[in-house]
Image (tube, rainbow, N blue to C red; front, side, top):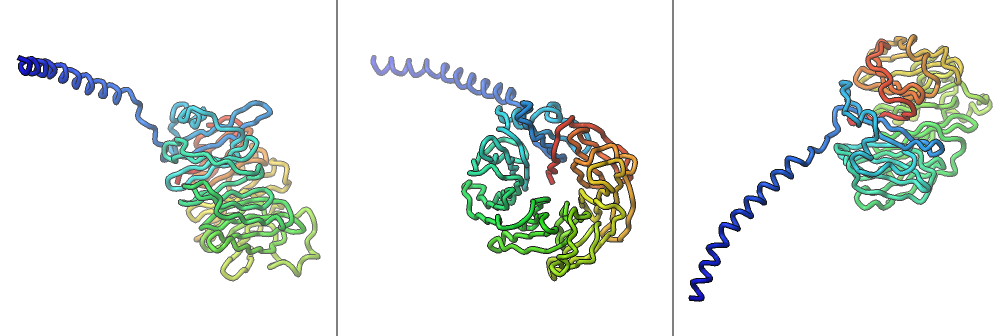
Length: 370
């Protein structure tokens, strides 16, 4: 009798088990339908807004597609806070990307590095630095390179978050100007008694090589065949230092520094005293020229074909509307002009406006995904 009751109990349990399993499957299907598909950022570029602690404006990151289509709130509001449910801490000073990850350089009291997935912008980790002097960040597959205003370079392992190398170059003279990164080398310029270009080979124990240029260097484009720089008329005469210069005959314009033999040669002579904002893409150089460093009413620009040597002037009717403080980038036969006062304009190579004022004010940099 006892065994018979057990059998009956087991038989009665089966229908309840089946019903439970059906409910479980049905519930999981509903959850899958309700969970939103994760947004993948591709075919476009990030735009960073530094923020302003005095006015209470928060730092933010926007995203635009190359074709101009907007991604809802991500084209106008901060995508980082939307995706991660937290604001970017403090000021957003810089941003860098590699194949898989993005790195944000922020500052509250100390500087911080925030590592995210580049495709989804989901936060993965945060690294707090000991200083508040950083002004540029660069990213490779394994390492983060942080460059500070006092000429200290930190090499940080992405996985461990630990500093594996510190290069202190605080003995260098002058003020820091442009900083760039290419092929595991850091390139930066200083303005002291005359303009100098410095190259730090991070593959080779952070070896420093300095090139005495003369005129002040305001923008750097490192390529495989050399380093291209724009040089401007110096504030102070450097004629008495001629013997210290590699090529005293160079004048303001576009200059090439050949790292293989250390030579410095003029590529383009400018008719204006302040060529600047040099940018390069797919065989083309673009540079802006002004006669007065602080006025934009006389702004011109040159487009130079590196392969053919062809030289043309563009943007005569467009660029003068900006002030002298703007970020310029050449990408896929389009010119991206980012001004803190006027937002982002996208132009073709003839200087014709394709898309205008698509970010609002106070944007500081464009970071392309590829």
